[in-house]
Image 1 (cartoon, rainbow, N blue to C red):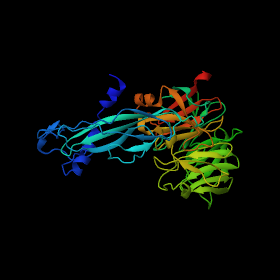
Image 2 (spheres, one colour):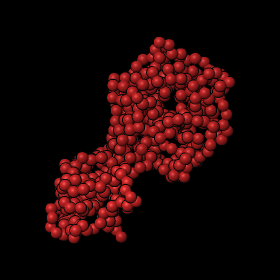
Image 3 (tube, rainbow, N blue to C red):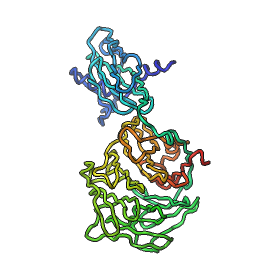
Image 4 (cartoon, rainbow, N blue to C red):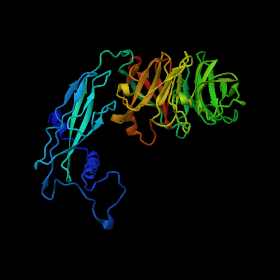
Length: 447
């Protein structure tokens, strides 16, 4: 069976039920809701769709031939070949079921709706489903695929595109614990990994786990950790913006102790240099220099929610930063401490829909790494971004073998992308922590 036939025979049951309900409701019939919690009474079996009701025959859906389009080219879908055996007029409903970005059709209910092909950095397939009804009890569906060709005018940094990493497990059951958010994590120049986890700062050297700072050393509540360029460790302690530094195990110094200028619900931190320590908090992003805290921008810069904690933040030595300001699905906030206002966007330009990061880190070689949701394919991707990234440029995929999805499917109870922290080392390795596990992504060329 060729690809066109496979596409033509695709029939998504949930979509069929939902569209049946819509079309029947429009025609005065009884609808079926796939999300209804109603159960059949008296032990009766639930109703099912059949191919005939009262002798009426089902219509035939035809979404037209697959098409190829270039960026900015008008595309017209064509369902006019759909038909009904009794010659009854048809109702049409078009739905985009895969591919990104999400497109807006000129009409979802015309036989020939149109749209403008988006600008994409690589060839991208976008699938539309056509559902047709004859006004009685029938809905039949058919799919059509539009291949949008690569826009060669988009500049892609080939140094990271399709860079492949080998993903291997370092620790399978670590002693650290956390709730909805992962432990803050950083790695030093010796590839020693540090996890800031409540009252304990864990150190992982190879496969050896030890306590670097713990309850015996002070009354701590570690939220996040980072290193400056000289290798000095900075620790965000508590949710009011206190910052500690440490140069040896068991010992800390006070960099900042919050007074009247407490930062409300501070939870993530990144170090540009000793005079610029950036902290995300409920009211926005602040730059801390010792006792002084300067608001870089408030939550009005991104219209964020003050009811949610920041997902993560990464800061470059230049003062460039990237973070997700709040609840799941919040946009990226990308900027620099010298900018008047940050850029706010989702990753729609690279096939990533609602692509807010689950976790981010500074790349010592420049830019940032992030783990993001690839919404339409229900997968997660490691991506690299430069400091000047926008919605449609500056993003590059980095391949992992095995993929993050393959690893999660084998470790469902102990591996979760939404609860993660990552840290990139100067050796090129990227350490990845989720729940009780620690993994490492090693570039193929360094193995």
